[in-house]
Image 1 (cartoon, rainbow, N blue to C red):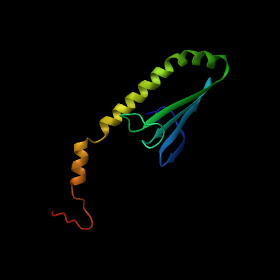
Image 2: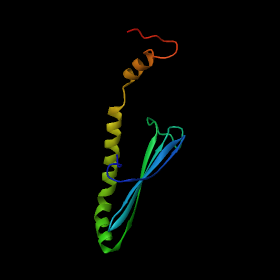
Image 3: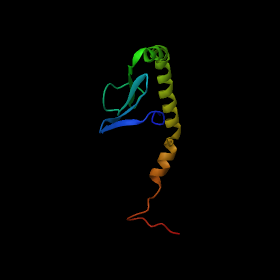
Image 4: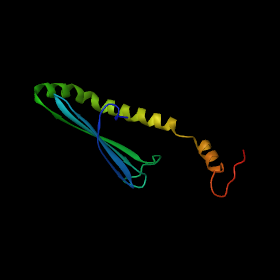
Length: 119
């Protein structure tokens, strides 16, 4: 998602989900983004959703150039952030195996103790 654009600064994982901190310091501003993934058992439950992803951003401007730049970016940022999350969700959903593929994989015998695979 954002890792290719911004370097990873930190990561925290729990049984309920995980969080990754991304960011970059530039001449005109410092930027941080936190991506928090919550599992279905935490927080508020929304019908039809298995979990939540929250994107939070913080910007610290430096000087007049940074304030002018961020004044323009501030207007488009919410729209671009939502589009980025939707695109990432779509890519992950298409990459995941379908229910039929998961069922076939579960039924297939695994090599190991108790199973013999003939050549």
